Image (cartoon, rainbow, N blue to C red; front, side):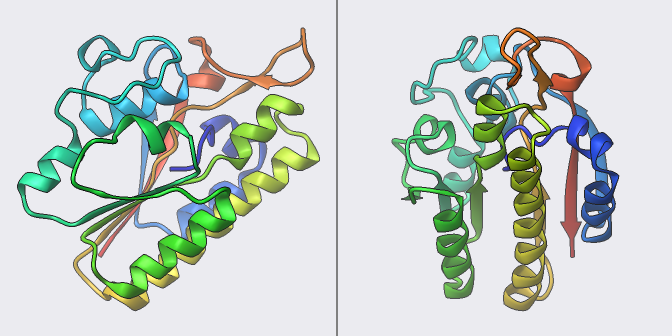
Length: 211
């Protein structure tokens, strides 16, 4: 779950788009929900519900009380881990369930812990959340050198995960590259932003590896 990695980034950097295509078996065009803000989007992604249904309609991060994919997985007796940057939306809004929660301080720590869990082989589902590009988008122009480097690291992490999963699982598995929204340049601040219905914020591509 790379935060803010929308179609706007793939259009600007077509080489990244080709890398994601090359490492995946499926590419799906999607649109974010309104307003395209992180907790709203990921609540919809992991519940299948519109904001009015799951209850997060503004930038707020309560623990969701509605049924989620994670509840369904628990009912199916699956072992689930959420590995997300500490105090991020994904780290917070799905709490209170019999899952394994890991909250490293940054993306690099998330990647290391997720790879450890993959090698350990104790989990049926591992959710991995990265936020560096969203951070850079808000404190620099959305295609600054720092933002572009963050996008590159997100793509490299995905490629690393694809290779590691193939080694650990071999067959009968699904991987998903599932961002929440895109972003645009705010002329008033000179930095990136997101949160309205423009195409740059809304248009997404999700990539899958189905083996």
